[in-house]
Image: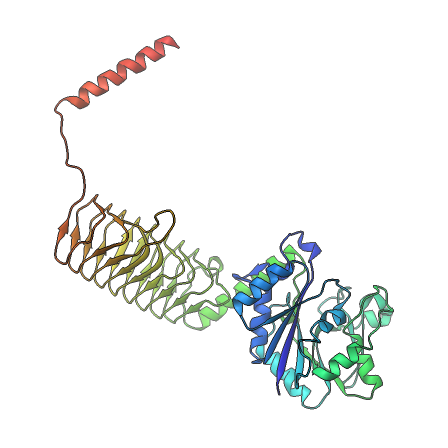
Length: 451
């Protein structure tokens, strides 16, 4: 069955107390909206429509950066969920398939739940997603069931006391044939306590036509909406707990799991050791048998089998570490490929560079990659030895088996097997240190007498 996603992302999120649109607040390294898009992508939709409103330009940029094929429509006035979905009418004109309505602030929807909605749709005209609420809350509408038939959805503010006691509640998500959905939305009115056009009204309208409507149940955590910073913090904690449990189950060693933070797309191979206080940003893959030592930060990088990173290391986007690479304390690597067995062990910055195999980079080495306008690359061959405190002023190339003397500033290419030394000659003046200290001490004494 063909599917189109309509993701509602127009709300301001007043309780966030933020200039940032609610759906762009980050969870596990990605905006809430991206989580919703990722969940919906499991249905392999033919079309994805994002309904933007508050901060629409920022929402557009974020959505398109994740998936350039999505279409953005604007809800200039927030007049309710039915009104929001209706903004996708023109984009989906003539679409022959189902619409699945998702919310941009609901990040935890599982593939299995979407599959069960699809299965139910084979027997019913409309499928609504609901859940049993643990505690009675006024924020959710109640699902009024007759057997497996969903009779209607009533908003809490419009519900009777008996209806408010019902625990089967509405998530807001539904699946329906596109043409039917927009026909029903055209009949939705706003005669309610908020004066809004509720998407939930399509259920009663469908029943009035004699159509079949049902509700599928999921776990409450899947439909967790993020309305405040407190909600966001709780969602982050829940996500990290699940991610740590999955890592442990998959054979990753976490001596202090509560201190490790994963991103939404972190991939860790089994028999990898992740020491305490490691943070993964988006786009990290660590192969089996690697070790990430304490207090390291990784994002947008790849770490191969047997590599050791840290402690206190930073891998930035574009860092590619081959097998058995060693990256030590206070080393930063950015947009650089490090060859097999190469070591960058202490206090170094390697940016915009390619390092060969079995090369050793001494402490304090820096690739000077930025001239104030453009970035330039450094190329280092196999089995090279870069002396401590070497400044490699890019663009520059160091050949295989070449060596640089400690403290050198290398501005020209170094051929294979050569030793390059680029530093001022040492000058020694006998007795000058004692004379200089005497002058300084006399000056200090004079200043103290004057005070």
